[in-house]
Amino acid sequence: MAQENALFRLTVLGSRGSMPLCRSDMIKYGGNTSSYLLETRTDAIILDAGTGILNIPDTGEKKKSLLISHSHMDHVVGLPQFLTSLFGKELTIYGSTAEGLTMRQQLDKYISRPLWPITLDDYNMDLEFIEARGTFNIGDVTVTTAPSNHPGGSTLFKLDFCGKKVVYATDFEHEILPPSKRPVGAEEDTGERTPLESLAEFSMGADLILYDAQYTPEEYVRCRGFGHSTYEKAIELKDMTGAGKVILVHHNPSHNDEYMDRLSEVIRERGEGDISFAREGSVYNL
Ligand SMILES: [Zn+2]
Ligand SMILES: [Zn+2]
Image (cartoon, rainbow, N blue to C red; front, side):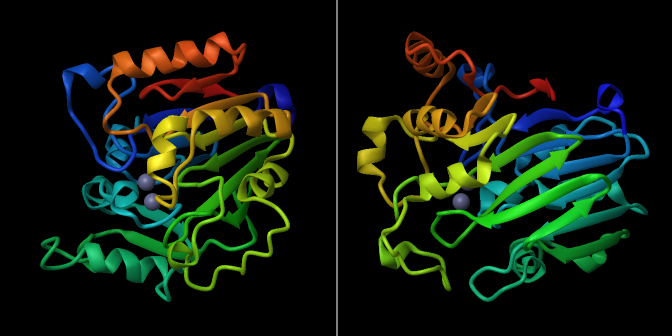
């Protein structure tokens, strides 16, 4: 496919971390939790199903796929309502087995009584689950996965299309987690390299990286082991990978627009023009 004709477009549907919020002082960056839409001319690939997924625009006849990083509530809370918009249609969900449960089994725990009135089988649609492991293709997009450094586990996704590369690195902590917080089956800490160095290798030469920056460096000291990172580490990651652009995601529910504007100013003053906080509704053409 000729590159100049290739559509590869990212839309921020929701970027709040941990909890959805609907507040007048959080309009600019948005209060809906994690969800992003990556479109080609034939495919609509959704990254995570936080409440942001309910902001999805009409993607017409494009084939819909959903990549779920992990099943923490902020990443799947929008799914049961979203599925009602797909009655009679198809959706393929890609997710990783965690804590001994497939993604389908993890979602069954949430989408069933007593937490939800109906089950996944009650949605009148064609729903398929595929284990997100290694490398696979969705249409002409090549998806590569790697384990994230997050309590309970999460999956990092790299999406390649026509020479353009996007990395989705949400719910990622740059320092090694204490043994009690590590996902079941995680590799032993050999001390050879940090999670940030492993992510940098995975993301080398990316055009766009979505990076978890929930905490300020000061907050991180108090929240070590919670599974999130900082804008400072995003700056390091950009330098290590030569990435074209880094978008900071998983906004702290206690950071309002005014506070995030001030953090943006700090980042700008450090000369980092290509690092910015995701804003709900923003569109990036790759
Ligand atoms: Zn999260
Ligand atoms: Zn999480």
